[in-house]
Picture (cartoon, rainbow, N blue to C red):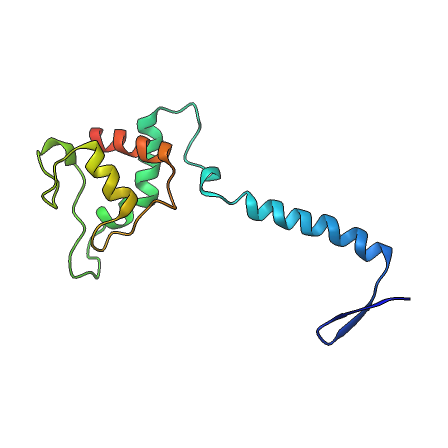
Length: 132
């Protein structure tokens, strides 16, 4: 009879524990791998890019850019009409490329979203910002 030591516990090793452990660890691995950013639910795939972009905006941008009375030294700029001006609030040109760079890399107190949003989500967000 074999005994397993797990810290202070001693457990008898049986075929049953081995048979249960393998599927359990496989399930845990699957659940961890399915939590990637690409599996986040940002609306139905058949929804328009602007509709998906609105969901991305509401979940990632609105909590700061639309908030009132944030306890920050500098308030994040409102994004309504962002592309209706020649320049962004930072002074950079109001182009898709510049806004994409700001979203992906962050700027000032804005965190980067390169590990949060994938390319399609950023594209959808840009389309929504043009409409906003």
